[in-house]
Length: 186
Image (tube, rainbow, N blue to C red; front, side, top):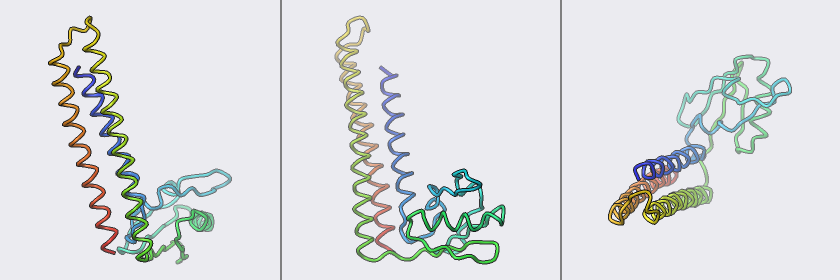
């Protein structure tokens, strides 16, 4: 019974972590190194993560600074940033690349808030699916008399799973409300 609860909680935490990761990649008008997480640079014929080729920093709230480890790869990095479809305009500044993050328009902010709401709903669905699977496992344990699990133990475990579900759903709501507020403040 405890294994079912632990497994359910582990999967719910995984859904929350996936949501956090997804939210961090949203471009809100504030500079964040995570905006460039998915950028792949064609470096000597091999797609390579930008983080492996350059140091990325945030010198100002609306600017990213990319310093290539190998100055010869600067043009490849600029090309990758331009083709990454992030809506960013990299500018070469000596051996570094500066990227100014423009403030999103009102319409774009509304789109981002809607995207956050969709991400939240997807995460809630994942949590509910984990709840359903765990309850199904508990019902099976109670049904199989060989396991020596009483109906009362099954009901207690189900209520524990419901508490886990409520707690993780609340976390989802908090993360998404925080992100939506961050988007609207810009």
